[in-house]
Image (cartoon, one colour):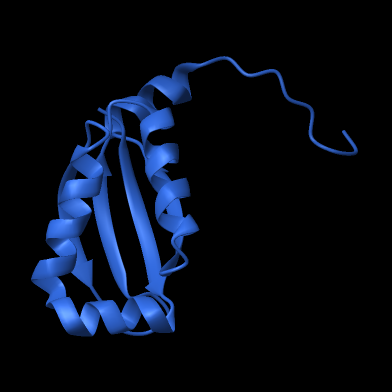
Length: 106
């Protein structure tokens, strides 16, 4: 299953929800929304600084991840960035592909 790293920061309203529910409540909410599209929460970490939390998710396909991202962002409770993660084996496969490329000015 494809893996994704999600980096997110709460809006003021989202942070109020975190304060009310605690980390356990938000983790349960993430697990619920992710499983609703056939995904799985691998891990979640809360942080402070520019981002408020990071999680690694498994999804059966890109469309499922996109559906979750759009729905959660539309709530206005957070701002997020989703990064596809590749395995070592996938990078090995990509490195073996023949690519026709000409750099600018060459």
